[in-house]
Image (cartoon, rainbow, N blue to C red; front, side, top):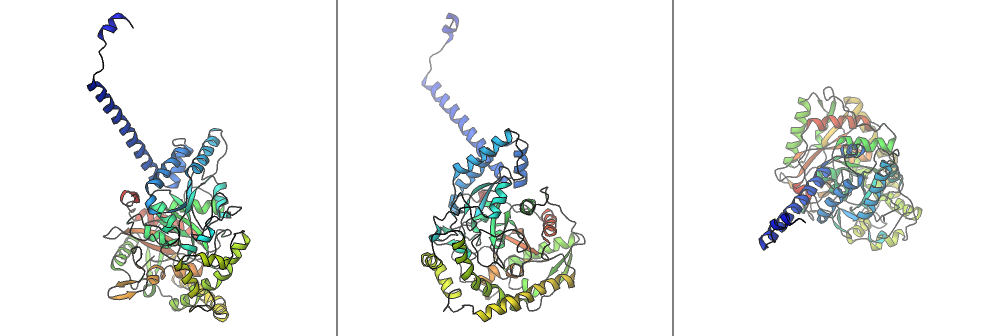
Length: 515
């Protein structure tokens, strides 16, 4: 140092030190705020947008994964996860980044972290089905649906919480804790795929795997403000998924956009993976069956549903008043009897096929009290609602074919592209509010409020698309479901894209569902 510069040097004072500390703290605070803003921006992206940004090199897979994992940590109080291993996720993201830098050809889902309902087999994580006896059960192989998603480049983000053994609509799991609705955490997210729905609504991921036998994809989507597809039964493999009945079981996606549902469908069916197409609403024919799907609705559900129907009509859709005579009786004779009969055989077969270290009897002995009671009453011999061989035969060979004919007939008679109706009769109930509801002075059973409208489509095997349409005065999501003819999944997704563009997107949950 020269003598002239030495003369101008000044000793540091306490004031200088304090100012320096304050400046450093301000810079650190700004960096943290910037990082939080960046994570929030990335978490808001739908899957298609996130994949496009990663493909263009604007965002690394690791940076995107870190943003989602930060949301998972911040939303831990929602109890959406049973298994979550951040370092495993980050390592998989780094592998994707290395492959991209090396110029390797990557799949259409490369770097996308996806939650998987914990009733779908994964080799890297336990598959608990939300029940204590399977807490440490690790299948040897991924289920085919998980294998296909990983082959396309997806990263398993973790395994999501659910209603135990998928036998309910609340996700109030007594073994792993209740899942909470991101819009109001003291309310249910719906079930049984409540963890996947809560995670996606809370911006922990944009796209995830759910599973539906009698509403387990669609009820959580409706209560959490999501888009969801329950595909035509058999469209995707259900091998390696904890079963109820092969006649109704079907895996499917939860998402925050219809184009993400179309991407999921394309990956699993081998269709082109470009963003899903849309169709004009003008000329679209929608059947409205008021004497079944529109009775006993919560007033706000009814109001929002009618407003959405009016918007569809104003956009050129033709609403056709239709009837499905005998629908309620056919559902009563098919839906529960077939499920409660078949699970008694399908679940033990699953345990044996995949090497679970527990018998069916031992699994039930260790199950939570509510599930033991449900199986005692509805499934096992001697229970009040035990399904006899004669009743099962009638349900499967007489009433189920009649239900499916009823669906074919309503589409044929009306020329409708879809049947449209409110997905649930009520918005999300309070956790523990399972005694039922009073709607306009009439007492409605809890099961009716959750499952009456979604049961026919899944029992008949037709594809169903859930579309959020608005929030109640209390800020709770309400949704419509569109059911299309069997096999019309891509046409239904195109219709959904048009409806999505017409209706205003729901705002995210307050603070995106974070505590």
